[in-house]
Amino acid sequence: MREIRLTIIALNNSKWVSKFLDLIENTFWGEESSIDGTTNTIFLSKPYPSGLRGTNLDNWVDLQKRHLNPFNNGNTHVFRGANNLCLWFSKQELEGTPETALQAPLPDGLHYVKGKTFLYRQRWKDEEMLVCETLSYLPDGAHFSSLADFEEKGRAWAHQRKIDQLSITPAFWACIVLVVFLMIFAFLGGAQLANLRTSSTLKSEEILIQDKLGGKLALQDRVQRAQAAKNGIIQWSLANASLPTSLATVIDNVVEQTEWHADAIDWQGHKLIVVLRTSELDIAALVANLESSGAFDTVSIRPNSRAGTWNLEVKVKDA
Image 1 (tube, rainbow, N blue to C red):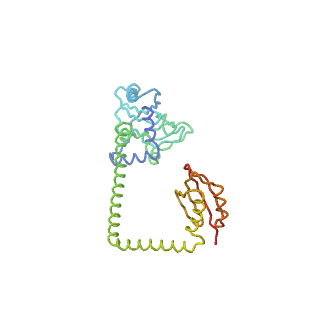
Image 2 (cartoon, rainbow, N blue to C red; image 1 turned 60 degrees about the vertical axis):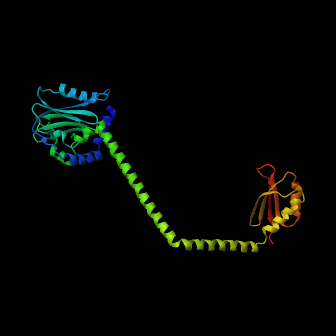
Image 3 (cartoon, rainbow, N blue to C red; image 1 turned 45 degrees about the horizontal axis):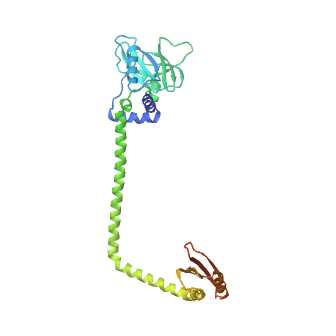
């Protein structure tokens, strides 16, 4: 559980997600954090322990707030970073968020920063402030930058948004899953409804067209089928060989040996295929007789997959 929460915190602090969450924060809450630049604070950064689970992380944070505070009645500002817990302790009440929490993250390394009232020495790593000390003077040879410049260049690195606190709760993600499910359901339902309406419209148009053109379409279909049959008869009559003549030659040669039993006859172009059913046929004699008839270019016969049947195939000679 701790690893999941820390992953969510790191994701919330990433550049693009952070901008999106800022937009949501301003839309729903719209509260700007006031900046306290006059109260002196003590800053501590402490890494998360590796063995915490569940609510133990919250208990550990509360423990750090109580035991690390050097003031008896002081005030504490807390920020849960991606890698460390950050704490600002003050002797008196804070009048807003500490100014060093609302500055933009700095590059890794040591920096001297001038705030509204105080001068700070800061150490940064991975866009998190690890050390922030208040100085009474600037060391020799050191150069400082204005904290106001960093506030204008980017989002506050330790701004604790309300949505950040919500995003680490199970109820928040349950709501997110529910919203996504409802959006998908609404999208699929809308698409299905649109398909049904389109299908119904097309069906109605089809029925209307059939009512208007039904008689004409039926007559046109009969004419086309009759023309196709006529063309087939004409093509057959013009062919160099015909089915009746070729089939008669095959039948004559078969019945010389046994009764004629044909399970199937296929005629295509000049090729005739007959599936013969017999157990008394002299295959060699039949092939020899058909070849000697002079009507065929090729004659072949082979067993069929069904027992007692043969596939006889002849290629008719061109006239």
